[in-house]
Image (cartoon, rainbow, N blue to C red; front, side, top):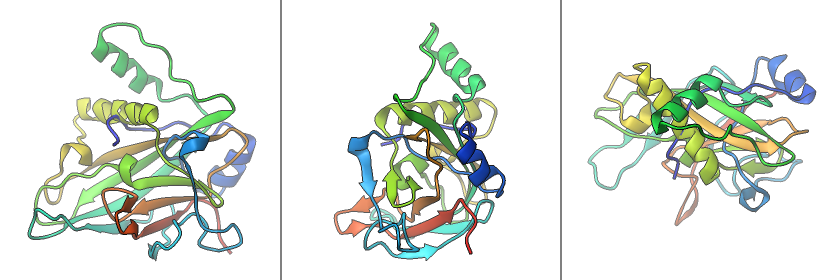
Length: 231
């Protein structure tokens, strides 16, 4: 479960810059080690990046809002959010202001976050608007995967802590995100922190229309956000 998160890191590899920045599409996601990488659809499939068997509700691009409808067993009506992936940045250190804020909250020096050997950080920045009828909570880290072609990377526990740092930083700036709870008509930032191989660039982002990527019944439906230009 994602407990820490928020804002941007930037595309450091030349491949990533050419693929995402030049195309006005960016993307990061949840950090993961090889053990947490989840195989998605076949590379030759245009749905590569969607979990096998998952219903694809849409293919928005960067900056294009889409609606998540999340049923809750303990409420009479579902939670509804309008989500916009604002950018995905890879290859740079985590935001130094966020790191400094996290260190000050602990009250002692903390190690500078570094990705695993051979990997790079990717930070996914989202804006989340509550379009439902009551207060609702949601966390990107639990329901988002960052894809490199047909391989999906989810957020590790360590990177969930960094995501929490982002959410706490923005909360200190008066911008509460959906993990704190949003009332109807309110919006706030959310972030996912992912690690992918340093030589790779992300291609899509999977956002489940749920509170997690999978349920007991299998993969949840979701949106396959396009980070690179499509024909």
